[in-house]
Image (cartoon, rainbow, N blue to C red; front, side, top):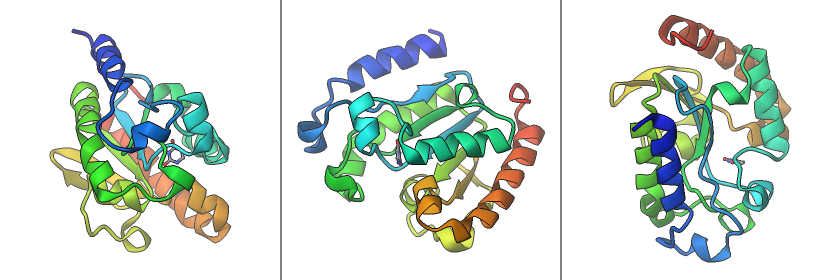
Length: 191
Ligand code: URA
């Protein structure tokens, strides 16, 4: 099966998920969006209010900033794949609980398995802790690529954190330049 069809089948299954209490308060499952063939995958934390209402990741203010960040490295969101650690919105945008992340984990694993990206960028501490290492320190370790289960992975500050604290933006600019050069080196179809 092609990646597109495999992801569609997975999404259809995920839309009916009732495996954790977040499913009770959601308006929509926010499965993921983008090019199933992309070599570059972004992973955020979980849907916020706008995402919950629209069923698409990163469509609110943080999403607009993510689009701007992509533009800075000459990419559009249609060229990458964007997903979250948890697919349903945690109430009042609190951090997803360990048990919610654990219940949701197999959906993200299955997405990764289908897409098989060459590079993964975690957006924020929660995603980095889920994907790279549970004790990941975002302030110290952002912008550094490492091998995680055979895939090059790095974390950047979450766009929402950049909206709250613009003093982090210069560091993120450097991280984006690192990402672009690594993507140029490793990805064959992105640039
Ligand atoms: N923040 C996230 O981590 N993911 C989204 O989809 C939106 C905001």
